[in-house]
Image (cartoon, rainbow over all chains, first blue to last red; front, side, top):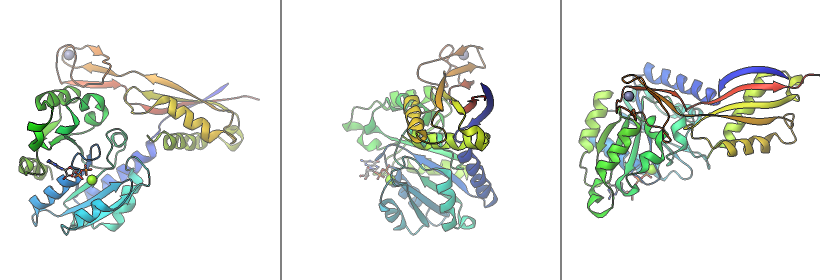
Length: 214
Length: 115
Ligand SMILES: Nc1nc2c(ncn2[C@@H]2O[C@H](COP(=O)(O)OP(=O)(O)O)[C@@H](O)[C@H]2O)c(=O)[nH]1
Ligand SMILES: [Mg+2]
Ligand SMILES: [Zn+2]
């Protein structure tokens, strides 16, 4: 049999579009984060907190990714920031072409910080570059301290870990030190922040870090 | 999981690399799947078979080459392979490491039947 060498990444097309997006971000001075987590860890709540914290100082735009409904975009638009909803219709993650299309509806020149809230899923979004500067993985203390070991790729590919819902620590069986230790074993370079979107604790520290990266 | 869309990507890549005449003669598509690529190999194969059945690629089978996770420590020099991929060296605890393999998801080569 004749052998034809290919040596091509299966996601090469996605990666090419992601590079194109990255170019647009650089050109327009946009700092972009790709926020990933399980459903319900508090991504949208954190987006709301970030907007409140920076209100008036930093121009924020938001891309919301969901399998169905524009409920999250509705929540975010109440804060008077530009927001675009991507509905994946069953798709378990955002892909670069969807993000690229949605950029047509945003003014990148007027954006300092772009927050992309990915579809709630700790597996699939890990492999898809969206042109972001960093992935921020959110985990809530109600999910248990073993999740970094179960979803290592997401933690390897993220720069920042936000541990949310620390207000619930007294009520749940989650050893936060163990959680951090597990995460840092998987990826020792992770920047870790502990926050509560309900009480606001720790949100300022995380936002200051974001601001220093912009 | 999204193995179906990955299988579609793979078929597109195959089509871009062979002539129309060669397409029906593709017998094997060899894909490298790393241990932490996040892809379920069986499900990828299943998807490939499902969408090529009855098409020009009907006679092509997908062969998966599993690539293990392998980490090199720049401090102690050891190359290790832990079951769970972790970037912390399991021998000396250093974080000064690099991934040698394990995140691949790549179409490696095609085998084409000759006349
Ligand atoms: N107790 C507590 N609940 C929170 C916190 N952050 C978010 N929640 C709640 O968790 C649920 C899911 O939050 P949401 O932001 O929609 O999560 P998403 O699915 O990741 O976007 C909502 O009911 C929030 O009110 C927190 O810090 N503490
Ligand atoms: Mg949400
Ligand atoms: Zn070592």
